[in-house]
Length: 322
Image (spheres, rainbow, N blue to C red):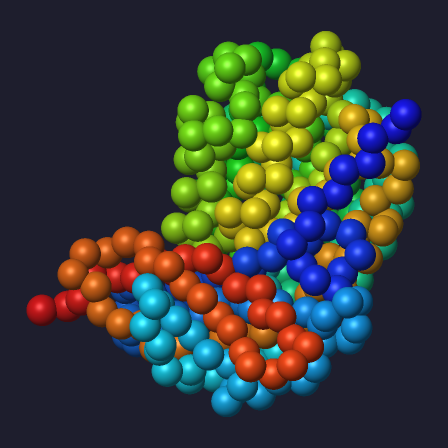
C-alpha cells in the first residue's frame, strides 16, 4: 500500500505546512550599520481555523513575547505589499533521479507565479556546494532557461546540507527576506549511515539549520528520490524525509512528501506555497537587550477569534551595547 505522509503544523491548510516563518532583515537584530539594532523583523503566517479564510488582523491585534516578556509591536505589513523585499532560491539536489524532470512543468509554473518584483535564483547542490545556474534576478524566463535535469550521480562524498550552507554563504546581502525551496531526497551519507538520521548527531544537518536560523533563511522542502541504492533503501529514505522535515520545521518552512517516491505532481504542494505567500505579514517589534548575543524564545499570538499566528520559535538577539 502506498504510504502517504504529510507533515502538519498550519491549521487551515490541507497539506503540510510547518509553520514558524522567520527572518530578520540585515540591518536589524544585531547587523552592523546605521539601522536600529533593537528592532527585529519576522514573517508571520495567519491561518484560519478549520480551513476557513483567516480573519483580517491589524497591528493592535498582534502580541509579541520575547523570552516570556511582552514586546512593543512597531509595524504589521502584508509581505506581498513589498514583493521586492523577497529573495527566493530554488536548490535542486544534483543526485536526484532524472525522472524528477517530469515535475518541472509544475516548478516552472511556480517560479512564474512568484510575486512580481521579487528576485529568484536557481542552484544545484553538487559535492557539498551550491552551483548557481541563474543568480538572483527578476527575469523569470532567464531562470527557467537555466533549469536542467539533475545528473543523477549519487556520491558518498556529497552532502546536500553542506550545499545549503554554501548557498547561504553565497547569498547577496541586499536586505531582502530569504526563502529556499529545496528539492532533495534529504539523504546525506557524507559522515556515514548512522549520522544520516534526523538527530543532533547529523552534524551537517544541524549546521545547515543553524546557518539558516542565524542568517534568517526559511527553507521549504519537497522530497524526491535519489539515484543509486539510496533511492531504494527505505531506511535511508526515512532518514532523508525526517531530516528534510526537521530542516523545514526549525527554519520555519513547509515540508512535503508523498510515500517513498517522488510525487506524481508537485502542483498541489506548490499551490500551497503560493497561497502561503499571500498569508504572510512582516512583523517588526522592539527587542529587549541581552547581555550576550544569542537566540531567545519568541511567541507571537492574538486574541482575535478564529486566527492562528504561525511565527518563529526563537529570535536572534544582539548583545546590548555598553
